[in-house]
View 1: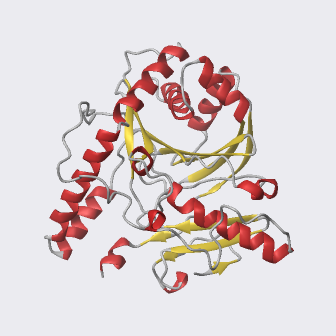
View 2: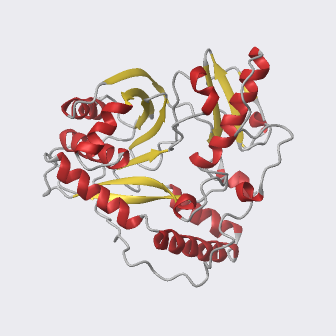
Length: 348
């Protein structure tokens, strides 16, 4: 794979990336790996990131570190990590789950969200966030979803459509495989109707957490896997042109008011003392507001992507954090410089 001393974006799957779907880049103290989501998800790519950082530190600086838990050159990688994570499941005979959340078509679509995307990087105290989760009967995902909804209500006070927040879930972990690299992530959706006040944080977080739990049962994940297999079989029977058309339609248009993804790494083991900040970024093409969450060294690191010209939503979000007694530190802001990917290239 290519390694370049530049933060500029390139196109994956082309000569610029040596025809790989992943690429490394660095600038100053920042080191980033960019990978197309078609290969893996956040939890799946973490073992590779950890192993690469281990090799980088030990080889570049001659540091002696305990190799336990890292996959290094010569390591035997078990099939449970790279093989079929669902071989033991009876997917074909999966039954519809007891609860399936109906799709909300008339969700709030934010105005003026058509500007070049930017990222804002924010550091929060893990202790303060988890204190709020305990006090208000939430989880980090539920708490942040409520804070986002409160901020959007400030940002668009006249829009009466329900706010929807898509929250990423790891189906592999729900079905019992926590260390497989292969892609099987999706989202659950929580909604905030305009007639439901958000002033009571305990009530809002409890309702939000309940919505997440109802959609995150093993039976839901097994059903999602069955439907995914059926969709793949249908796609395989279509012509290339029809497949590209379906892919283009699926990738176009907002699918929720906002998105949250929390890749729960918490620790890189012996590497933690060498990491100042950790951010996960994603292409802001699914919704006009996206928040990726990472936690390391007793701090939450948020990368907030939005497609607005100014910082109106961001300022509203920060005000809601302050009202919840969560201190924040803005670590930086920059235009989106993620690697792109011309998906039809893959089909060709």
